[in-house]
Length: 342
Image (cartoon, rainbow, N blue to C red):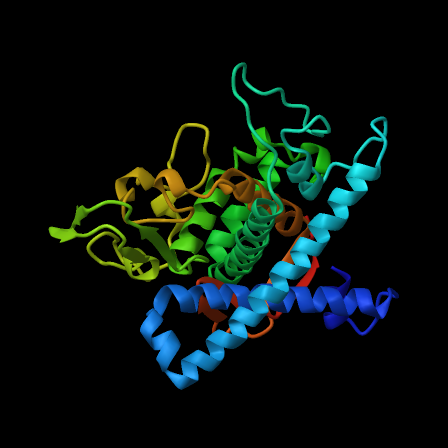
């Protein structure tokens, strides 16, 4: 956070230079790792090995991956050692890394008892590293980018923006943290529809991949086992066969009207009508495990930021600057923000 703040602000946070540089390096390594995943999934092994231009990039990305893995392994080993050296009576701090290390051990900070007759082993350092990467890659960038996209579309659709603010003001009149609970956030049906529609037009994850472990038949074609499949999400979301006016920003297509809602012009088009032509968290056994947390984070951000501050783009004629490499990221979004006059 300090690294990000110092890169934007003229006033710098006074922290050791090595700490800031390490954070900056870690962020860059993570972003390059995402790029590497995309290249390895989309370019054949033959091209990666024998095309000189691609091969040099692949070598660089593999070195970046090794550096990232080494950095994470060092963090895991250091924290594991701290836990081992701590006395049994020492209360361990409640964070993700500590939870992963202590899971299924006598130091489990979550205090969840195993199911009777079920024996589960602790996680290895490699498994913990994979879970941490999943959290960094899939649990932070995607949510942050989607919030930027929501802001952009609301600025370009003032009527939708007013409906969002009206719903937030109704459900959270005082805008305090005490009001923000999962139960109250679940009442923000129109805000949720805005999130869905934003992701339809600009999906943060632009393709879904699957690997066949057995022979199968898809779309009338027979495939041998060991095939790699990628679904082009943006093409699916903008397909006129499945969506009316697919390039128009219209949250009503995801908003289900009922007697408790006061949003004007809502229709009864429910997401289930487009079950197989819309993807925000994937599907099946590999559906995003953090989907509920991501929605809570996005609705909380909308409540806290939009409820208290007015916002507009500094240049309404400027297109949304994005970069797509597995994850669609917002490269720049200049906005003017000021306190709301209620």
